[in-house]
Length: 442
Image (cartoon, rainbow, N blue to C red; front, side):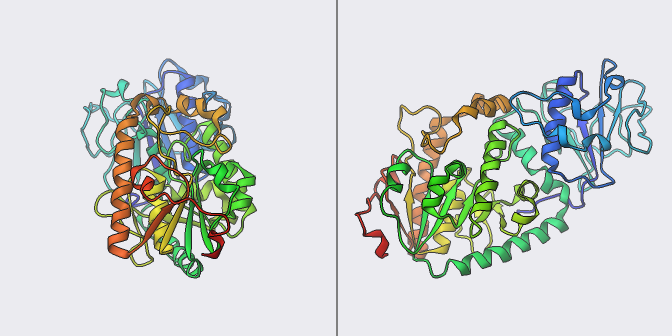
């Protein structure tokens, strides 16, 4: 669960060389977002360009970005930290200092990891445990495979690799001392969350399936701790009905990405947190620095970063065992583990699952989905649609739901009930619709 370099990162090297304004604008826009407003005075961003591009760069903020992406570069001070070279290794950037190259460059091959004292354009390296990061943004033009230790910003590489790299850059740059401080801060906030939920009989988990709408017209559990997720923040009428206590989201592309879809989601999430001051926000720890940046100072006091274990058993997080098991799904990674940690029973609403004929992973309630912006998501992250394995993902998801519910029941005596129909087998067996008035007596 260690997050971050041993020391804070103060140098970023972009590889390979840029050949056009379009490439440069796209990647620098992703970098501007990933830095989340973090601009240490001694930060250096080193990049190389070809075809005389360096002489043409006059205004970093005016570089064009893809239409599918929100323009973070326009309001960024990223250009203050960039130094550019091309053939001849002439320092043309605005930062002070000299960029020294090697007289006899060492050509690296995919998978190589070396330690060099100076940087030569076209020859990336990462000092392991040091204070610099190499970002490899085009794998096809740099040997066809990832370089060891490089952070991958190539939107055409495998599935959500680029989105994960962008979303976690802040935690990698912060350094381990700062990330340990943020973890302890989050653990203390989680302790307060546990204490505040102690008197609640039920954790009510609200998801985004089509059955959500009808369920919200009926009775909801009384004395409940309400957990919402993802794009439910779009529907203000639903939020008013639910009165959320906890908002969770975790997807690196949908929620922490550069697309106009993700930017609109974050706008809705910030508005929801402002409108419901009792609501805490919980995200994966690796994305915590970025979440802190876009939520702002006022909302940071209600933000928790949950450490995520990539292996091992499930866990119902406590202040003493403060972590969750990675599953890649908001229900099994955060909602159910946290909900069942806070209460002895969890009631689910809108966890519909997937019918075989459903497009994509599953159908969402139209009132909580930003369908008009979905195209921007897939255009900004083209590898998502290309590499999606919907049947495989759903089969794994169903198995994890089953295992998690058995773990919580057998180990801790927790009970789970679905108040709405579900195609997820473990929830279908636990379907028990609420009768009018019955839930308020819980």
